[in-house]
Image (cartoon, rainbow, N blue to C red; front, side, top):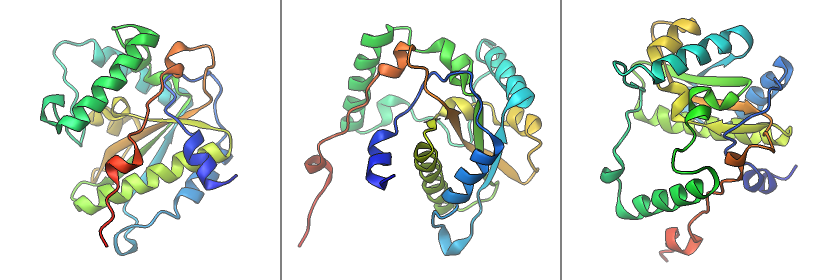
Length: 215
């Protein structure tokens, strides 16, 4: 498959079918994604692929934590209030929310969020606790490679804060080493074509609005 076709074809799937991906496919996807560059070839990222009973436990705990008024999400990369983003970004987010409300109503995707978008497989990406900020950039490159490599196999994906909202609980369930922390999670699986939430489109800005030639 052409790279451009995969990049344009991939989109965030917010409701997956109950159809797991094989370990061999996961391994091949990660092996391909490892071609992403990193700072002086540091390769600090580690990948934990959750499915089956482990993911079922994570999913159950996640829903419980989401409805516990005494618990707040505490992701490694903290949330920035929308009001703190620049105006163009706020306008983009507002436009996306309007499209989302059109398809699924103003209540959003609470059920999908509680159930981690029903993803049958989730790959969690970790970094050493005392990592360089450049390693976060490297992790993003790896994540994009994972999603594009997955799409090449006909496998859909979803990168989301929701997957890493409660890192301490994830650390225990995934048996992550003490010197690592979960930074990002990617849901993998196959899109449920009957879920309205998957019809939400997220348009991109005109390239002329973000590209500046200086000669």
